[in-house]
Image (cartoon, rainbow, N blue to C red; front, side, top):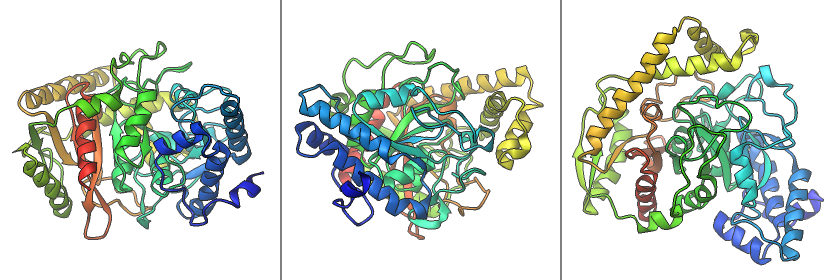
Amino acid sequence: MLADVAAAMRQDGAMSDSSLITTSQQVRSGERSAVAVVAEALAAIDAQNPRVNAFVAVQGERALADAAALDGLIANGGLVGPLAGVPLGVKDTEDTVGYPTTFGSRLWSDAPIATGDSVLVRRLKAAGCIVVGKTNTPELAAKGVTDNPLFGATRNPFNLDLTSGGSSGGSAVAVATGMVPVATGSDGGGSIRIPAAACGLPGFKPSLGRVPDGGPQPVDWLDLTCRGVLTRTVDELIAVLDVIVGAEPTDLRSLPTPTTPWTRAVGERAMPTRVAWSPTLGYADVDPAVIAACEVTVQQLASDGIEIVEMPTVFDIDPVMDWITLVASYLKRSVGNHDRSEMDPMVASYVGMADGITAQQMVLAEDACHYLNLRLVELFSTCDLLLTPTLACDPVNVNGSDVNFVRATYPFNLTRSPAGTMPVGKSPAGMPVGLQIIGPQHDDVGVLQLMRHLESRR
């Protein structure tokens, strides 16, 4: 079946340029079949994935069967969701029916086939998305680069010798190369924003609890991780967010469902009037070329009438050790008594650090989150948003271990702030440069509004 339908699809190795919004409208109206759309995605995966390793598992016949069932429902006049027929990649840290969840780890290489979907996947499927496969992640989503001992490295489509970023690198590359228009991600230290910036995409970490976690098991990185998605455009991102945000009774941290859909709320939101720009946050060593690329966009915002306040120091010290204290402890809980010798050495080293972390140190790390947020409360009392470079330099070598290009994302997991990234230019080496946008507590709409404005300028 797949071969017959895929033969009629485009042969250039990517899906059509239609937005997922247009694609879903066409499927719902009967102009296109979901089977044809999914087959196009599967053909794109066949063409693109061997060179970048974004997908680690694909079940084409299952996806086509799901698409055919959706087409049948539409033909019979049934009600379908706003994302009907949109192919979906699922990060291999999320359960989805019919696939094992390996977390990119040899420790879970023989994990059982999932019989249920995560909260995020369930909402996307209810909206009409069709799961086509699982995307790559570093082991336990614990690195800013996407490689692991089980499936290997995911390569950056702009330069195959460089990393895609992580931990949602497989999802970012799947979207950036046109294999699928949307893929799930998670962000516990930058894991949506880092690969989005590295691969030239918009990326958005919602406020903690906006996109709920929950389900039968406790949240993995309970006070850090936010669920989300990767898409090609901001309008697509907002459309998908509208079906995945909202309260979930099994998630203790979930926030109430917005009273106004974000598609409308973002359109009605006024432009910010005063924005802070911090090239280094006060502690990071950032490539001058990255700063220069970001400053071009910052100056464009100034020409739009926004007052720019340069802020050399946001935080007095790098809060990375507080972040590591929490992450190491969360990882140790996940790994339990498994054999650490089977693990990625860097991830295993985090688990080893947790052996010496006391309960008091954990609480002090949580206290640090409070003080970091107080600094942002002070900042946002005079400025609407904060801008920084997303990455400190170009992505590192695909086989490298240097993660110093990640310096500016994890503070805003510690503060639970909404934070996005937008591609704003290229480095001298031709790699995408991302500008990070951070908002006050729960002002997701304000961040998305500026992201949309920046996209309209491109």
